Image (cartoon, rainbow, N blue to C red):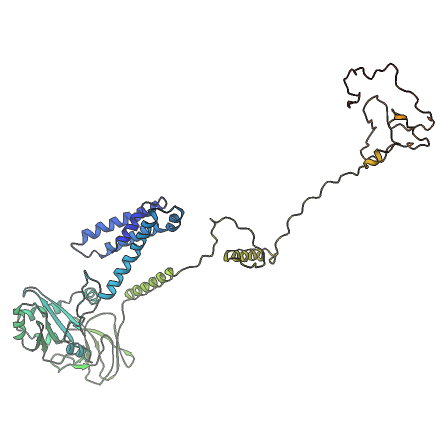
Length: 500
């Protein structure tokens, strides 16, 4: 069912990016697989298998990052169907396994059995004020016998770890060994000190064990069902009792108790009595009588006890877990909370830098605009507020002013018949009028920075003032010797360079 995760991790090796992380995850996965195979024959391979699975998940996740965009960029081919099948297998496998566990439970190292390990009436009686217990024997031969001391309906998840943490109880080991061997000692009283009221032998135990228990004084056989046999101890037992000082001072007085703590009222009694608990001595036990702390002591070399005064009162007995155990539980709760917070979906506040730059969105909302336009407009308004512009966009820069063009005379002034150069006089039979029409220089010409020579020929100054006394007409005609048909030395060009 987990083949999809393996295929996704293998597909990650085909990615060109993040090769270091993917190969590191695969290396960790292979090391975890090797340790799981080696430890499977002798110990539990759970931790190594967990490391192997987490490493494969890491490789698959690194390979799947951005896979949708990479597949979409390529043309449709075999990659798209294969990627879809791998993704479906990777997601459906764990979901189907989890659904199977929820419906029928997990198989393999764990096996579902009846949670009630003792008969129903025994489990019901163990919840009374005496908090009686049951000794469960399970053995395949009389030479090796296993036992378990349970309360209520039977052992629960975690009881084995707690028992291993408390260590072995050599006193109880010796009592069980003598009971099965049939040593003839008063086994019933010794079991009563551990608040044992019933002895249950599971199916499959040797017949020698049942015969020895039948012959043990103080044990009475009650029933046999489905191959399991049950015996009862013929004496009063309780988890907590008040024991008088000295040996043989009378029967212990039972005290109402709970599974762990005790909150009850005890009567007055003789001096030197002791409150005895059928639990191992531990520094975590504390007791008070009417609010006054009691002195802790050890009874019978292993049981927890407290010295009681002669007067009675309100008795409170509690047990505090070690600081290390409490700190570890709080740390586990904190880590679980951090894991839940990290799994919550987050909100991206940054803008994808891979996208091309967008034009500036106007401050006013426009009909039909999308979410990206609204987001960019909101960002532009925020930037404007931070810059102190209050949402106004800066004015575009003005163009530089054009250079001033000097004013020129219109062409009509140049074409007047009164204008003429000093060289031509009355050209074409026309005469210049007298009276000083040109008695001053051309000062209206803005380009006149010096002497103006219209044809740059002859070297005469055209700016010389016109002499009004020169009132004779220009009567000189063409030279008779001039033949227009004769070619000019310069061709058909005039001396000024113009064409004839």
